[in-house]
Image (cartoon, rainbow, N blue to C red; front, side, top):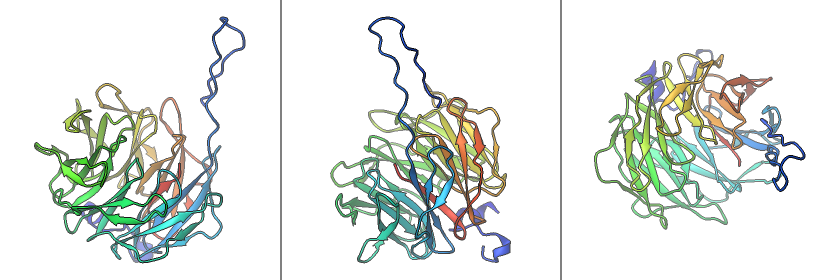
Amino acid sequence: MLHYRRFSPRRLPGALCLSLWIGLSACGGDAGVAPTAPPPPARERFVYVANQLSNQVSAYRADATTGALTPLPGSPFPAGNTAYAVAVHPAGPFAYVLNWASRDILTYTIHPTTGALAVLPGPSTPAGARPTALTISPTGRFAYATNSASNAVAAFTIDASTGTLTAAPGTPVGPGSFPIDLAVAPGGQFAYVANSGTNDVAAYAVDATTGALTELAGPRALAGAMPNALAVSPDGKFAFVVNLGGGSVSAYAIHAATGALAPAPGSPFLAGSGPESIAIDPSGKFVYVTNSNDNNVSAYAINSATGALSNVVGSPFDTGLPPGVIAIDPDGRFAYVSHSTSTGISAYAIHPTTGALTRVAGSPFATGLAPRGIAITR
């Protein structure tokens, strides 16, 4: 039932009774023309998954060549009650876990070599009533949590040396009814909130010093029925919103100076049934949407001039189990999908030219109970 999936912090199986391309350059050629350098080798990264029913975070080392996941020593690591979302600091030393039932955020240090998580000493950070999303700004200076029950967004400053969160001045702000997800533009100057109760998107200016949010003047951008997730393209030109009740993706052009949203030509674009999560590859060429009722992922190519979407050949791609959250590694080579009605996370290789997905051998990899949020180190 879509409405249940939308308002519940977890989707549970009945059985639980709980709910390169590598650019090659030839030697020789015209004198004085330097050969094209190959791209740097892919980095090995750490992947973290929030497990709602086991109140833990599963941690993995992602193989740089295949994308396969290997559990880290000590994994899983303890979290709060109903670990719902996880985020990592862009500079790498900290991770944050949003806990839905305990309504707080736990801060962790990430061991640079092993990837192990250690909870920061002291009390957790209050997140608000029924928090649903946790976002770290691209600058790494601020964090934001949407509070679906109190119709508010909490803003925090991040201590660069300790990772500690401190409530920003004027927080929380009220963006609309049932704010469900938030994204910050790559430059850090604008933020966008999807409001599931009012079927719109609120746009904000971000104070560069405090992280406080001020809503932009003018009407909010209309979305489809029950917007559930959103993402901003890496170049900051476009925003995309998944409409859970409408089975579609709304696309918008972002005004570079004002941050205002304008519908892209042809928007909204058809998705599958129960679209739940969205991710954009780092090149800004492709968008991926999980369809929770169809057990697949829709893949789209982004028109670089307008933001309009067109289906990738072969889309949608089968996930076997119902997909939840999708995340893409910073190299853009692999996508990871949690299966929140099960105990697993699947990995997919992304074709660099077509955007097509190919399941990685060994998928799905074991997680805790009801995995949801995913974060990947840079």
